[in-house]
Length: 482
Image (cartoon, rainbow, N blue to C red):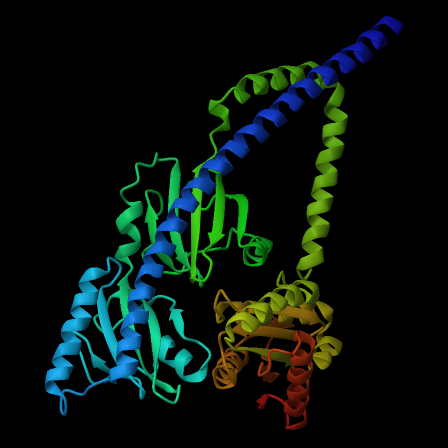
């Protein structure tokens, strides 16, 4: 017995020693290989960064010259200065042909009317980003827009320089539009292995170009559901980030390097499929497997214990972020996601709204039919809301019959429409209790963010006040604080 124990303990010591040495070798090999991969990704990203920066810098110089000429001579109309107008059109075409990233060169006047281009004229473009920025922010002299669909149906970005009159006031803009195909023109020439991919995104995560991997459509916003929010926080804070993800949904993990281009609304993403098993690391993995089988009998209990601990951890983690009854966000999870939406609003000023909901007379249902029926009603309410909300909307339960909905990209009028729609859906819910079909109604209060200094809690308080007004008005209605 004593010899057996000595053998067992010595086997454990030898096994753990071999395991430790193999693990140490694997870690160092993995670290070395990862640094090599990151250096390669960084090099590829630097090449694309230099190319894009140089292209848009060259075009900005040309646009500066054009803006100075037009500021000095003024913008001419075809009705009054036909010869000067024709000369300016020829001038635009000359510059357009000289710039590789120019699809169309154009001029707009102080009223944001498109006056000069080789295809269209006399068109109001005041709704475009470049016109709104230059008219509202006089300190802005140059910009590159986010991608949009132009009048010819092309996915483009626009680079523009404002034109100032003698009083240093906005007199128009000269700009070029760049077809998104331009972004593929150079990187498509790179001889990249199938395990490597390069993509260019706009700062609002629309795909501008990719080679050779990827299945998303150019101009479409990419799906970032698999990417943790802290990855984006690090990218926007530090300008670059390295992480691992199955970004292509092909079952393979990729090492990903993302970099924001300075002074341009573009993000470069370079990926490399992880192929560590094809390196010398596989030899060490065989050693680890062998060691594992030597000591597996001695570790069964430990493995069982670890498994139970992991299951409990996952259970507690789910309870920490999800409502135990309905499975939707609890208060902690909702406030975390709401803070992310608020951060996005402070960067991009895209409004969002919050809807507070209470089931009318819910306590009476609980008292009369019991808590089991009440739980069924709460679950039916949350399921009905989820089916009629967008994937981007955030539904949470704060406790009891108190629900809250955050609707990104929606102003107060749009939020009222959503709340009214949900109320009609809730009225059609039917719950069976004691052979009796029960229906329900709800009261809702709406608040919409109007100041970047506002907090999530302030918005919740405003929505709660509107909910109180709805209850005072007889319930089964929506009230909005404007």
